[in-house]
Image (cartoon, rainbow, N blue to C red):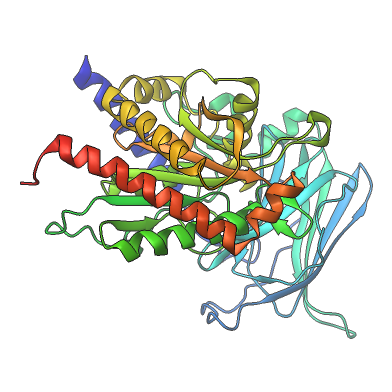
Length: 441
């Protein structure tokens, strides 16, 4: 039975990896999937832009009503693109080369016509994405790039038209249609970045130091929570880099970051990084926010994985974090129960014990230097914590929705104290674990 279970796990993971590896910006003038009127985006230069010379997007706007809605993106040059719809929830995804978005604050937040909102950002080095949250089923009626003319810049134009559910499903690629999804692995026409193992530091066989993976949450197109001009993705990235630098300075451990810049990393790939590098500890960094109607909360919270959430707030947070891939245009949250159940069943009891032990050590250290939540230890079904063989915790370092916490989160002095307490906990965790394991062979 155990061998059969492992076989299903490897099969499921293989199919998920195969789906994740499909990324190609179409070389055709227009690769919008779904009914079109034949207009297409003219081809751009095949050569990749240098890092200092990415196309610039200077403006974006919506026009129209709940029957027909147009999106216009102002550019400084022509670009290639690929646009396609996705179901459940209804979205339209536009993949483009890496773009320097110089758009006004709040762009994309307001609803108009068929579009509830849209997001944009980097999804991988060399590739950006725009994701439209739609009010219902639509088709991409037109999609093209206009040349600069009469003093107007080049423009990417997309026209959305309202359709019924049946027409929408028929416009999807066969493998994306809800009723045709295979039993073991959900596939999608959406392109998601694969983990570039070549970019990761090689695991040195002769280096016996424990490897720690630091996972700053969100990134790229996924801002996470936000307060004014402060976004969660930037706050946790700064914290993660500071933690990495402090850990490396001790010389006791090797460190890998799931992201060290503003890049979108799918949840499954974050776990793959930890497992592929044989990590001894995985620490995911986030900063929560509560909707105003839910009152106020403050302080740091430490989460471990559990099939059953410890309370309603933990359940809400896990549900929100687990939808991060949908924000990036790829929804893998409905992972087949056959695979998910096996992964959970195979989770080693020892790994859960180590995760809980580290969480308690971390709480004990952090409470001496930073403000903690009134219930600092919680558990919920976070997908990013489900590696069966890597002790993992998710640390909400504070609430961006709380004025006092936000002041701490942007304070270098507070960050240094919090990072110091986390390193102390890491030292205590590995001192006990290495002593139990005995000398390395």
